[in-house]
Amino acid sequence: MKKFNFKIILQLMGILLLFNGGFMLISGLVSWYFDDGALEGILLAGGITILTGLLLRFITKGFEKNIKKREGYLVVTLGWLTMSLSGTLPYVLSGAIPSFTNAFFETMSGYTTTGASILNNIEVMPESILFWRSTTHWIGGMGIIVLAIAILPLLGIGGMQMFAAESPGPSADKLHPRIADTAKRLWFLYFGLTLTETILLKLAGMGYFDAINHAMSTLSTGGFSTKNASIAYWNDQPLIQYIIMFFMFVAGTNFILTYLAVKGKFRKYVEDEEFKFYFGAIIGITIVATLVIFFYANVSIEPNEIQKIAHPKLYGELESSFRHGLFQVLAVITTTGFVSADFSIWSPFLTVMFFVMMFLGASAGSTSGGVKIVRHIIMVKNGFLEFKRSLHPNAIVPVRYNQKPVTRGIVFNIMAFFILYLIIFAIGSLVFSFMGIDFMTSIGAAASSLGNVGPAFGDLSPVNNYSSLPPFGKWWSSMLMLFGRLELFTVLIIFTPYFWRSN
Image (cartoon, rainbow, N blue to C red):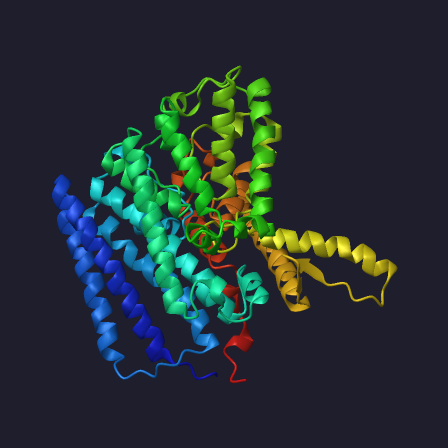
């Protein structure tokens, strides 16, 4: 068996636990401020997490500071599991979610920025628990940015291979030649955008607590809300929804491009193929959605108490049709999962269209889930080039992205990723259906969990939640969330026999 440097792996797990425990203590301050009754449980959770982290750091003192590719895979996967397992403690110890299965599902949904929830009445939860839910989003969102931009390319996987392929090794356009400094600059950008959205939401009429929570959920493309009706709660305040839409769009954009734009290099947006497709797809799909909602949306269904808020009268109201169409297009394509209306009842055509968007995803190097647009671009280009290669078999016709050739290795990697993605989706749907779940709910749960979207179809529609899933269904959904969030290969490679061989 391959000799692994387990000391450095445990040392890094200890650092993550200290980090996680620190954020739990911040949630404890929120509990103290609101006097919501959860303070003792949250402080106990933070104390256990921090002590465990200190213990791991103590017993691994003197570790060899050399992490290899194989350790990298273990660090990424075990890191997400460690954060998720420790993240259940505030829910369980405070009594907010006493079931460990439900608490783990909520936590995994938080860190993977999926936004699926098992809570039937969010508004009765203690404020500190709602803050902790949003915090798990915020941590997971930035974690995936650092992972995608700084770590996965070193392991030879991930959507940001394209960035690495364009400029082997870090360059001036990759912010800074050291990974640590790249991560630090991205953290500052992430925090700055979160703070900006919080201020704008407050100025638009949202309370401070709701503004902070929704800003954290938006920038992480997570989707946890402090309201049962999600963003539909503010359907009578369009400005709030437009602010959230803008930041959903930003969160679905490559963060390196956003950083360069902040530095004045706006031309990078125009030059980037992925961004142009991302922007164009949103515009095109929104126009189609607006027209269908305006002329054909089904608003005759008798709504229940929550649906009365989530189903605004759309027919014949152009601005409302446009706003809700654009909002839900952004929420699904960026995998944020916020809800301003129940898109599953608009029309069969839009239901299928939103289902397809779950497989699209936004930009590589963003906090969004899904396949990512860059992979679709490469696959489509390669598909068209196969016609040319069939006519000219001896010609060397490389796929070009951003005017530069893409190596065959990257093309094969992307094709393998997409095939694996579809296979896991199919298996995921079959497993859900084996539990007795109906067809629409099964495929919706698999697509939404794997794509880290949140709302789905059937019994998991935007006005419902995942509490109806059986216990095994919640564990299965949690596993799919982890697979999708960590780009499949990162997790799956650990289960292959050659990963553990000595050579």
